[in-house]
Length: 557
Image (cartoon, rainbow, N blue to C red; front, side, top):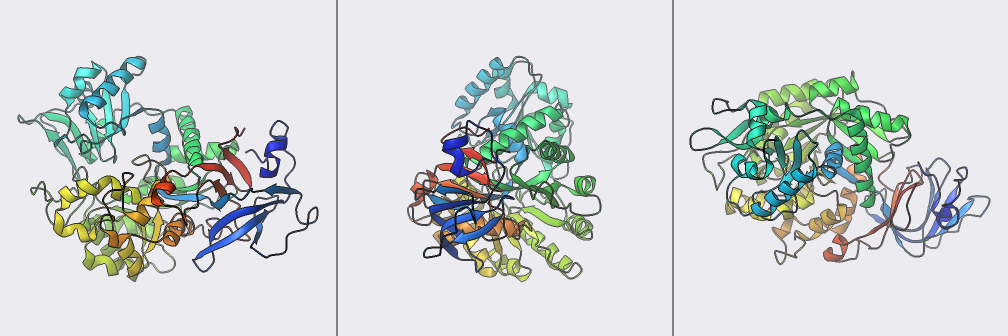
């Protein structure tokens, strides 16, 4: 890791870094969340040679003495300083691999997507499979799922497998169907669905657990591939000012990649890992959560469990049928009994539990399981519900009864708005993306991105959280505006709240004495700027543990 201090960037980037010594950065417009949970302003930061904050300097405080309390001094030039952003829900390896594969997330029509696929196939003749992600038939205004036949027209005989933007459906061409052995006789697995043609044959789209029929045939990434993907993901996160991340769905192979990076001193971002199911949890953690490793850069906290699918692919588990397809209420991945058993298995070994629940039935089932297990498993459990997108208002209060952490992704609301209206109809929108209501009920908020489903961009999320509007400023006044949160809540949910959600609040997440010096320098103050300005925030520098890991002004070696 480059340990060069900010004070020395201009002077010493061309020379070897000196031994660590205390550093003072002052003349900043700093904001952090204080111990009381409210925003706290400061003008300077003093941190020691271990990258731990010694003192936070406020307006009117006596300045530290040079050569006695610090060796290096930096003039912050009046710039904005904030704690490093924490992404409370992302898929780190998925983010890296997505950046290295075919990306359809910005396509706005089927024709545009097919042309991009055609070009990518031609540019990569050596790849035995073409893989990618990001398509969204809702943005294409297609009114249906795409088909294998449409994909065949631009891909030839090589198998192609493209995940939907939410990761809950996949699109295959005929070569991929043959490689997976999928025919008209193939059955829908529990918790999944094969979209079919009129004759019953596979149409080419697989929803939720059905995706495994094709995933099982994909060539497994090599260790070297994972190392490159992780390095790529770190750079993406640093550019956005993200210094820590909750990795939702960590496999043993992912964990080994993080350990290799740590052993080689290339693990910079702080990873709070949640294993991809109970089996992976046991492989990685054994008898319980791991200790913090590599100076608080890696820990296995717990396990991620999938209870339902996504709203866009109609896999989210609803209490009543979908408004636009009344024949279905979603695709639960687990029964309520199975969920309780898996949660109990993890809780008995003190693993933290994070349950993916999107539909109102899924959220009710997750809350019910937490209610049941809380009577047996006492102590500081910090039960997490990931997404909590559609919640029956009658269930709001239940989130507060056990101080459940609502780990939500604000940008999903702006991305999903019109689709959610179609899926739910008008009568259920009062429980859609209900951040303010959950907070008022006593839930703890933690904000994330779900990258690579959305960009790993806390600034887009911050703007959405306080406005309930998309980048186009629509709808006027915000969508379900009663669920907006204030700026203090948004900042906390991306920093101290996200740290609390991962049992890390005594290590990082705020700028306070004794915590890690993880901070960012940005060109916009989110506590006063407009949502439009916040979305356009540029990160100037990103620091972790007192070390510079990313700079917009010069390369960091």
